[in-house]
Amino acid sequence: MKKMVQTDDLIFEYAKRDEEGNVIGSYRAIDQVNLEVEEGQFIAVLGHNGSGKSTLAKHLNAILVPTEGTVWVDGTNTSDPNELWNVRQSAGMVFQNPDNQIIGTVVEEDVGFGPENLGVPTDEIWQRVEDSLKAVGMISYRHHSPNKLSGGQKQRVAIAGVIAMKPRCIVLDEPTAMLDPNGRKEVLRTVEELRKKEKVTVILITHYMEEVIDADKVFVMDHGHVVMEGTPREIFSQVDTLKKYRLDVPQVTILADELKKRGLDIPAGILRKEELVEAICRLK
Amino acid sequence: MIRDITIGQYYPAKSVLHRLDPRVKLVATLLYLISLFLFKNILGYLVTTVFLIAIIKLSKVPFRYIMRGMKPIMMLLLITLLFNLFLTREGDVLFHAWIFTITEGGLRTAILMAIRLVYLITGSSLMTFTTTPNELTDGIESLLKPLNKIHVPVHEIAMIMSIALRFIPILLEETDKIMKAQIARGADLESGNMIQKAKSMVPILVPLFVSAFRRANDLAMAMEARCYRGGDGRTKMKPLHYTGVDRTAYVLVIFYVAAVVIIGRCVPFHVWIF
Image 1 (spheres, rainbow over the protein chains, first blue to last red):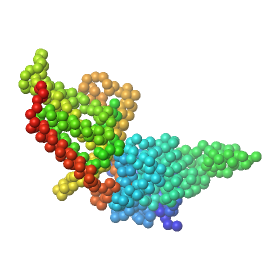
Image 2 (image 1 turned 180 degrees about the vertical axis):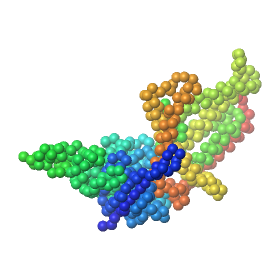
Image 3 (image 1 turned 120 degrees about the vertical axis):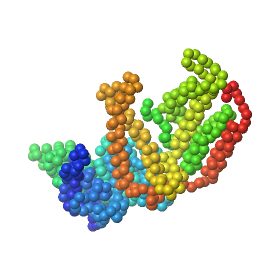
Image 4 (image 1 turned 90 degrees about the vertical axis):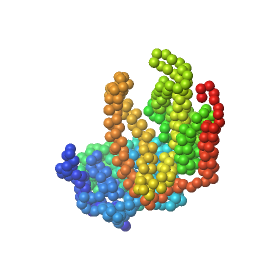
C-alpha cells in the first residue's frame, strides 16, 4: 500500500534566545522520529504536554519544516517550497482552539475559505461546502454565526472547512482539548464517520487515551522521541510504562491491570468496559 | 454591559436589504452619510427620517436591537449636545443664568447635530447589520480595485477589515472575562477619579493584548494551513453580480439624495427656531 505520510529521521530544533533575542542554543523538540502512515489508516499520536506531538503535527502540514531529515506527505517532500501548497492541500489541519481557526463570520463562508484559496470555481465551491457541512452534520447551521455555536459545533465547522479542500489526510491537533465531554464526543463521532464514509487518512494528536481506542496504530511520544508504537491493545497492555510517560490510562484499563496483577485470569490491554465485564463473567 | 455593543455586527435575517449587492450598500451608505450634511432646513430632516425608517423596516432588524448600539455612544452624543448648546452664540438669547447662556442658534445646532449623529450611526450600522463581513470585504475589494494599479494592497486591506470585524465579539467576550477575573482578585475598577480609573484599566488591557496577539498568531497559522496566500489566484464563493434589485436600489438612493438636496435647500420652510 502507498504511504500517506512518512518521516525519515525527523529532527526539529527551536532556537533558544536570551532576553535580547540572541541565539544562545537550541532545543530539540523532535528527535529522530520515524513515522509511517498507510493510506486510509487511523493513526493516533499520544503524548504529554511538551512531548513534541504538536510540533510533529505542524510538520505534516509544512507549517514547520524539518531541521534535519525529511517528511513526505503523499509522496511530496514538505521541505520543497514549490510544493508547499500541494502539501497543505493534501494534509488538512484542524487546530485546538475552535475560535482561532474560524475565519468566516457565517458558517458556510468559513467552509468556503479553503476552496476559495485553492482557486476552485464558484459552482464547485458551493457543492463542496454543502457536501462538507452535510458530512459533519452541520448543514442546518450553514447561515449561522460561528460565535453562537458551541465548542463542539465550532470544531465540526473547522473540520468541514478542511474537508472542503478535499485533503487525502486530516491532521487533528488536540481538537478536543478545549471542549466539554459532550463536545468531545461530538467531534470524535464526526471524525469516525468521516473516516468510514470518506475514507480519508486521519492522524489524531491527543493526550486523551480514550480517544485512541479505535486507532489502527498508536504512537506515544515523550521528549521528542517516539517511545512506544503499536496497536491500541499492545500499547494499553503496558499500563506501568504509560504511567511513566505521564499519560492518563483509562480507568477500565487500570482496573483490569490491577486485577490481573492480583492473579485473575484477565487478558492484557482491556480497552472498554464491556470487554472487562465479559472477561470477568468468563472467570466463573 | 460590554457585550451590548452591536456596532459593526451582522444581524442575520432574510430581507431585501440583506440580499442587496454589498457594493450597492456601500455606495448607498456613503451617499446617505454625505446627504446628511447637504440640507439646511427641517424638511430635509423629514425626508431623511422617512428614508431611514423605510430602510429600517426593509432591513427587518428590530428597532430595539439598533437602539442598543446607541448606548456606547451616548456619552459622545451628550458631550456634543452640551458643547453645541452652551458654546454656540447666535441669534436671540433664550436662557441666561450665571455663565450659562443658551441662544436660539445654540439650541438649533445642538438638536440638529444630535439628530445628525444618531442618523449617521444608525445608517452606517444598518449596513453592517445587513452585510456579512465577507460580503463587505468583497464589496470594498471590488470598489477599490482601481487602486491596485497604484500598488495599494486592496485585497489585504479588505481581509484585515473582515477579520477585525469577526474578532470584535470574541475580544469583547474576552475583555469581559478578564474584567471578571481581575475583579475576583480584588481589582477595583469602579471607584476613584478618571486617572485612577484609567490606571485600573492596565491590568485588563495587558492580558487582552497578549491574548489578542496569541490569537492573531493562531489565526495566521490556521489561514496558512488552509492555503491562504493573498488575493492572487483566489476564486470567490459569492462573486458579486448586480441584479435588477441592485439597479433599482441605486436609482432609489440617487432619487433620495436628489430629494434631500432639493427639498432641504430650496424649499423655504421655517418652524420656530428651525
